[in-house]
Image 1 (spheres, rainbow, N blue to C red):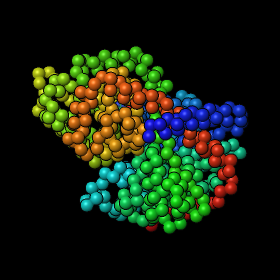
Image 2: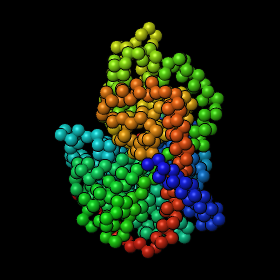
Image 3: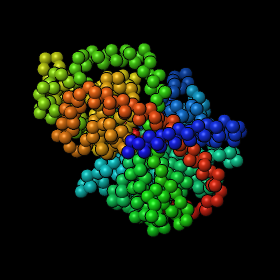
Image 4: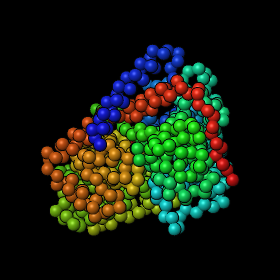
Length: 526
Ligand code: ADQ
């Protein structure tokens, strides 16, 4: 697995060189890349004197795309997420603006529609389906509210994105590549075809897992088919892993009678038009991480961290507060470790750096309570003198997270399902203690890093405890060998390669693009 991945890295490096040449030599025909994502690169705070203070957005997608938007001819279209964003959007009349070298445009949606699209359909319905988090004998139920949220929220907001994108595109003689990101925007390719036709490359990327056909039976047929047909208006669809791409092909085959795979695992034919399902594993920005590690702030954070850790071994986790990240079972595994291996008591420190997320959704609020309760129980049971076995630090501080990743002896990444998981890659790259990565076999990162991590089943609390024990007691030579290999793997395929290979594929395709037939079926509404 690792060998073939290395070969792919070498190929991508070669391709990246080619892409650079194209952009630099074809002056005036430099491709325009439009990124569309729900969350943008900045959020805005309105000041009293009618000025606005931008601050960098959070989350894996923003982290991944940040540096790329600085270096390519990119316009980034996103939603105004709150009052500050809305005020800024109105202030600039919804026009494209350059903020700290990033061209961006925000859409201020109707509040009810946005809530329906975001808090009823995208999160939780689609997110929960794709991470298979539903407790299906009880939840979800597709109610009148769901239907209304689909018809009057998700569908029109996707259309609004397509409209905003189409307004940016004036000159179609240059190559145009449109990259809609993630599960919020599944219908954008379909609406774009209606608005601007087939002279542009549309290539969505799905950041989260794509489960097989069975998981999609939760959705009523017309919504499910609407999503599939919406995506199938693309030229190519990017997924994190080959498994996700394969699952997408199978899902289309299973539900849509006008599609077939013609015996392939990575192409779905809409009548005769092929749509490729390609894996582009996302990664971290190695250059930016290296710069971050060189700052005085990093040293300060590490010093503060050392006051907590002292001479103990650090068991770290860094996550959004998110049920799919499996934080509660991770804590239970730590409790089991302390129960079954008392020799570690007082000699290890678990640190959970957690960033609040989607706190307006009930499941997320309840999950935060469960985490704090489990942490409290562990501390109540095992604290000795001034040793607190678990520290849970809630808040968003990327510098602190990176500093902690440099210091871990064991990094626990045990999601139930995860598209990739950037923490696994960030940790592998920045860690300075030959730390061991304990990694869920259901994280996308497992397909690249699995050979040098210690794998766990996310449901197996006992097994996870035993694997943390194994990591804590691993001989130093083996730790070093694994840590070196992990660092090398991350370094060889960073986020620029992820982006570069998508752009390269789209550019190659744009040459034969005119031949494509316009055969995009309409997403159905009730
Ligand atoms: P996320 O689910 O947000 O992303 P992940 O890939 O782990 O998950 O990225 C989270 C980012 O936020 C990382 O850069 C991490 O360092 C940072 N972060 C997390 N907790 C933090 C904390 N407490 N403090 C500071 N920073 C923190 C989605 C998918 C993933 C996929 C990414 C990118 O769910 O599977 O890897 O998109 O495609």
